Amino acid sequence: MKPTTVTHLRQWKQEQRKFASLTAYDASFAKLFEEQGVKVLLVGDSLGMTLQGHDSTLPVTVADVAYHTRAVRRGAPACLLLADMPFMSYATPSLACTNAAELMQAGANMVKLEGGSWLCETVKMLTERAVPVCGHLGLTPQSVNVFGGYKVQGRDELAAKQLLEDAKNLELAGMQLLVLECVPSELARKITEELTIPVIGIGAGNATDGQILVMHDAFGITGGHTPKFAKNFLAQSGDIRSAVQQYMQDVEQGIYPAEEHSFN
Ligand code: KIV
Image 1: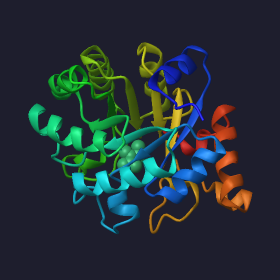
Image 2: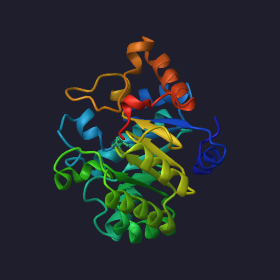
Image 3: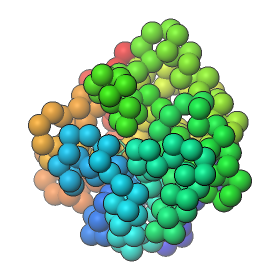
Image 4: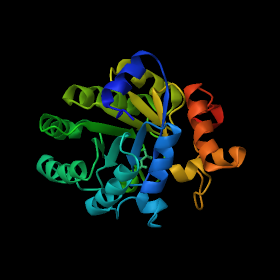
């Protein structure tokens, strides 16, 4: 199978071809996802919640993400593999370089960082040193204590303007992909239209170039609170392979996320 690269994602954006991606944390699911045709996987620091049982992503370490990245890479050799840089692992540009190197050597194709324009210097430094960067704006879970909870971001005019500005600044600094989490659909549409790089949404409506779901949310095995944007594809499909197919098809056809999964 030909490896998926960021160039493919750019091409899909130009062709207005939507794509579905998932988180993965182990070789078996990664293999199944790749076999079903998922082209982009993320070893998310959501593993702190889904795998480790914490109530936030803050306890996750670089070693944790590297361990799961190695496993996912073995299962899905051709996927474009993103790895999350955990809380505080990119607090300075040089710390970011050291920790990103570990994730790239574990098999990631790109690292994902949460935050706005303050990250521009880091993004530039990583990109210049051959580490492609995916940004993450909106509800950035590592900032849960700053936000005072998991809340939709960019709802008022000023906050929306700031998010758009951050996205543009990060793109200028070298960011090659962006995840937008829990922002109003219209804002996500605007950011997607104004950036030349692909934008992946989660709780950001269906106008983004791609979508991502935490795999546990896609299969309805999220313990406790289920986010508004989540959809249990296993419930309607009956088996995991069909659920993945349904998710991909619904994203490609713009059926998922629907209004009920979005914020306005
Ligand atoms: O950690 C994660 O799984 C993520 C996704 C929610 C995008 O960042």
